[in-house]
Structure formats: structure tokens, C-alpha cells
Length: 180
Image (cartoon, rainbow, N blue to C red; front, side):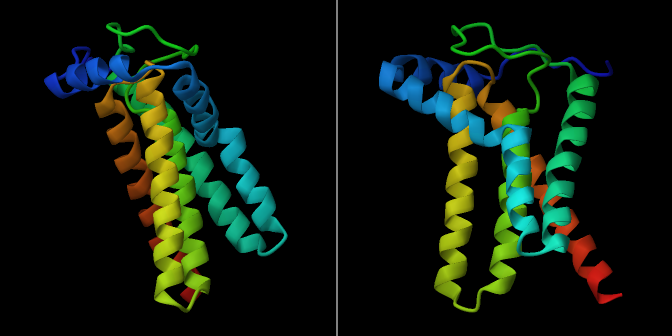
């Protein structure tokens, strides 16, 4: 453990208070479903599906997901931020809070998938739709983690930013490797 930034920010407290007022059975069920899209095994399923179309794309996607998981574990140990305490968690979560692993893995995987798909598309509108779908999925996964009470909003935002950064770094490396 290197750093312990345990206290929530004013933004985090405000987000938790807002979320607690929104809770309902239907939203809770939806959040439990959406949060699954950020689990590493589910994200890796996209790599398996991509394998049928392109082995290179599948390896790229798996690298994004697994690399995101490795980055996540290292950062969680280094930062060691405790999970939220001002809101009843609706699901079990283990380990430290920052960054949100579901948010990071979702951002790394779905951003990479969008990049790979958009490289094949010619029409700008289709690219915009793919990017929007990826962005919406990432945002919903991140929001579900806050709603479920297992992450602060800043954990989810940090996970998204780290996952996107990882996806962009990989996309650049992959691009240059393919050109070599």
C-alpha cells in the first residue's frame, strides 16, 4: 500500500446522496444487470466472439481486457481507498474502491471494440453510432457501480478515464505493429 485516499470528496458525497434517493426495486434490478457488462469474464466473451472474424482483433481485445485487469489490480493496491460507507451496498464487493474495476474493464474493452469496429466502417454516421453505443455502455456500467453503493463516483470516473487511456495506448501500439 503506497497511498490511502480514504475520504470521499464533496462530489462523491453529493452523488451518493442523489443515488440513495433514486433507489427502487426496478432500478436496482437494472443496475445489477448492467454491472455484469463490466465483469472481466463477460468482457472476454467479446474476444471469443471476435475470434471468428479476426484472430488479430480478438487478441487485441483480449489484451485490452486482461491488461485493464492488471492495471486495475496494481492501482487498487497502490491507492488502497476503502469502499464507500454512507450508503447500503446492494451487491457484494471485495477489495479496494479506486479505481472501479468494472468501469475500467468496460472502458478498456468497449472502447477497444469500438475502435476495431470503426476501422472497418466507411460511413461517419455508422462510426458515430458505434462510438455512442460504446460510450453509453461504459457510462451505464460506471453508473451502476455508484448506484449499487460499491464505488464512489470518482472511482467510476477514474476507472473510465484509465480504461479509455489504456485502449488508446493499445490502439496506437497495435497500429504501429501492423505497419511494421
